[in-house]
Image (cartoon, rainbow, N blue to C red; front, side, top):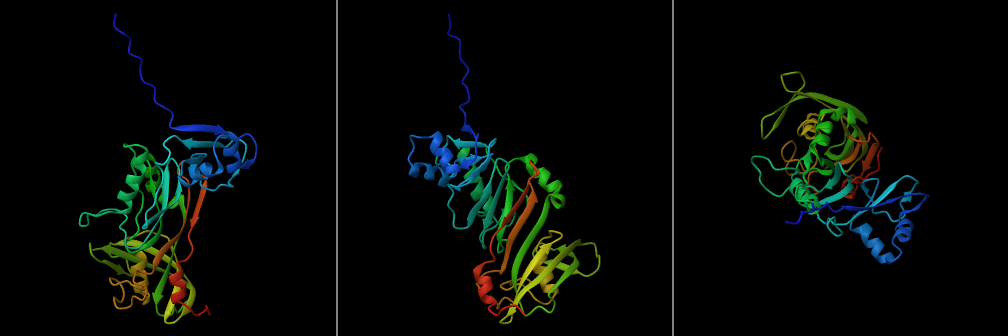
Length: 304
């Protein structure tokens, strides 16, 4: 008689713990893993394998509340991420929010095939499973630094893309522009037409896509201005084109500004704030990075 084949069972990917009383994360881990040293517990946090309610958590004194779920990935060491051009700001089962350095493409284009934020992060998520993928939600220009996000599944990607203006409730940039801004605040509206290598702006509807940018002058000095920008729309090169329209191109912008004016050796444009409602849980999510220090140093005189 032939032996009956016993079907293999999928091994659990995580060890789950339910929080029953308020305490800090380190104390909770120590109580659940008494055999582990404090150094080992800290290593679990630094290796990004500890989740609280499906969110990777590295803060040792994170305040836990009853009802929360703490998970420890069995794939220890696979979640480490080190890259000089990218920093992971937030990660959960549905989203990845990162801070991108200037000079790195968000994704490949038909004309440019090279290492990008997308390919680097795809390699990262595939360490936890060869079938894991990332899905593109929005992009930053190569020379723009700052916050951007990717989806981890197609359903989340579609939710974000189809409801972008409802889900994303605050998206801001900071820039250093040439010259001293005449107004403390204002708005630019134009219609943009993308001609592959250059985006043209028209003050009237000429068949292009309507683009609206709001701006606030933070500081003026030394022949430059530090400006905060809020996007009402998200067109290609929108901020760069609108700053050119105002007669104050972004510093370091050789395409829409003055190529010879590049004291920082980079485009002085940074996406510093990204706020949205989580596409699955509906929870308000808020991410913010400081203004780049070199931006503030360039506009050295206090605001007036």
